[in-house]
Image (cartoon, rainbow, N blue to C red):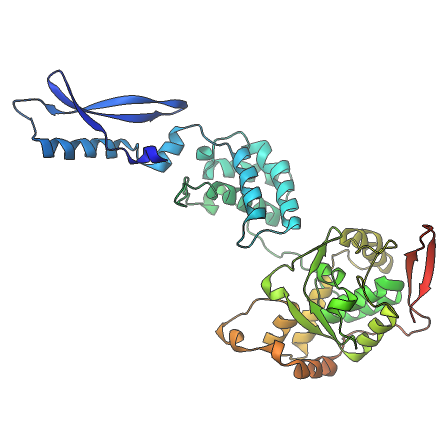
Length: 404
């Protein structure tokens, strides 16, 4: 971008003083050596040396050769496809708020499925409100929900906005117009929540570690990745009354929690702690919930092979794990638990300045007393038999182990 600071050179050309400078040509990589007349060498209209210099600079500046945006728009430059790859790589590797692998996977699907097929070969300079309006119409005709359309368009905007010069200034500043693009308004977004009766019924109809997992999700409000990332010796207190959320699991791989606020302590009531302690038995280390090979569970497998079939059997609307989280948040709010404590347990950001002064991490006794007083909000199944979990022998044959 050093070429963006041209002042031009003044020369004599016949009876005229001219200023010469490099000029970009739309659709052409090579620049031309342009020249513009400044004034006659002598006679009417002639200028002195200082005036010629000032006039030459005005001509160069008015031509736009020093404008990064005009340079980018005059040059074919980077396509949307190329910039989208660069953007996703930078977002995953940056030091400030790098995106999670799950988010990267979702972005990859969006780019491959919708953005690149319609915008991929376009120069970034041509990706404007009109281009996105055409894409909105195609997604709407394909039956995408308003939320999905808004998410896809939002990602397209981020890709365009990520193109910057060496000073961090956007090469393609845009004033996005939702009205012009005819972006659909997101209304009545589906946010399913279990009821107390549904949680109780679900727990009666699942067995083993899935029962403990669902009870833990409903009784704590943990995100599914946070629950699957719990390790017995690192994140579960000896009495099973406090969970220390320090990591998450996605695609069976540990990673950092979703946000800085997700690093927290979550207190549980005695009934759930007793269930958890029976489930752990004599285990001293390892992940709390594991597959037969000892690896962390896959949230996708649990969702499709356990939760969804169980909900279908009970005639409950199909939903994801966040329904447990919404149940817990609603229950705690109904019990008039302080909102700042609810946010602390759920791992949400502070809502106002006062929240920043409240230090719940320094009040473990009070947190436990609140957890004891509110309870679970659902019924745990009667302990008719010990909780079982499956592990695999070294001979690769499955063995049933009873948690003492």
